Length: 632
Image (tube, rainbow, N blue to C red; front, side, top):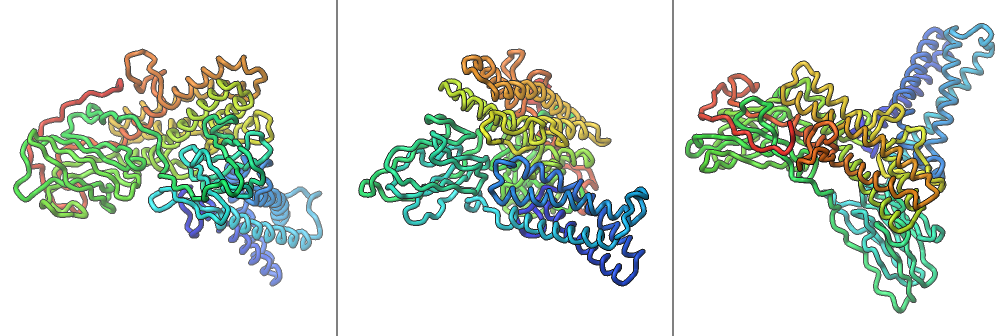
């Protein structure tokens, strides 16, 4: 429900659905009002009752959670922006209308005590109708503010950042890869600097003195500008990812007399650099029994957009024939051709295949097929003799999709373990900023970054979420869902653990799915224990008054952040395994991909709808189990 909406705006499917429901309620109430004018009172009562009930469901199931996720984190400090003020006004008036309209509906159905049965029914009905129409129009306005006119990210096709057009006497400074690009600029007096955020994470541009200029939190695609009217050097930083004095994400604006300034030229930043990923381990074969090979999902340009195939064959295909790989759905309704395998002289057939558009392959396909096709051909689906296949269990697959591609309830469409990767990367980054601030003797920086760490871990519905350091600004570098459970939000760790448990308990779960589900669950349990301790330390540091007394807490928080992200080699054997006390976010992600991996076996007659009946023709010995860096 968090995917792209159907109205052609920037809204999610849930936001579009809420808008349609709101307008539908207004239309139903209008029909009910016309029925009352026609003196068809019984029909009028039923229509109004249905409309109010739909509105109650809409508010409780969609709008309350949406408000707390999208608007509440920016209130009150961002009420000067239409994004937040519009949402707050709509929420307040909507709450009043919901209570009043529900009461009138109950009165119309004689479901309130006799003492509350008002006599002037027409006045109450007309007032409720006017409120509903007003709230609906206000809701359309809020939708327009949030989704129709919202700034789009300043990126080119393929996700690469591009220079932003600048006006005369203006210089654009992109915020990219958690840096100001460039860090130092020289401008003539009277020129304007425009900062544009091109990162996925929010940033600020804040003068070191906190007074000359101070942007609000800038989301991707948003900008902030300031005109420099005096000569001098002006240092600044990002409040989320840097500190005053040139720490981490920081920069300097040098303002010189007009005749000494170089020509203003827009920067041309490169594409955002993703966090380096460790070398993945091979997909374990032992949970498949004795497969002839494996096909494992990996990350290349995106998440699970690559498939690595390893297969053993003793006899190469006949002259003019080759082995081709395909991903399909269980019912054969969709197919992704991957191309031919490479066969070496030792009987190994291998291939590394990437999604042509960088999309998540694990999200769409749950069957893998290798067939014999004419060499040099480009078949769009298996048309020759099917030889090998791998199949994922249909009922368990839905939970694999939640882990890797589309977890219900998230602010953006992504898998739960993908969210863990992104949030723990940000956690480690801010724990580092906190340590840098401590080393620089910057107590205010320690407290600010401790607030960032707490809010990221705790989530936006945590009772203490918000302005923990008392600077009047509530800042959160995370997406608000939190690592830990907060209010009605499960948090990434529990959500991932629940999805892994559901996959393991699915009636058709394979031994491989069961084993790696258990590994994911163990990792999330490790991470929850570490995250709870880290949350407590972050709260302590955000309210610290003595810099010297923070040393132990800062060091421990940095250690915990690393464990949450990567895990801890607790037994000192040189590897981090999916066992209690060791596995962290990277291990959980890897084993979620293992859950979606295929063991490859000779094709059985009739397994693929619509394909020719055939048997495997190669004599293929079981694949040897290769080394694996984890305890299984």
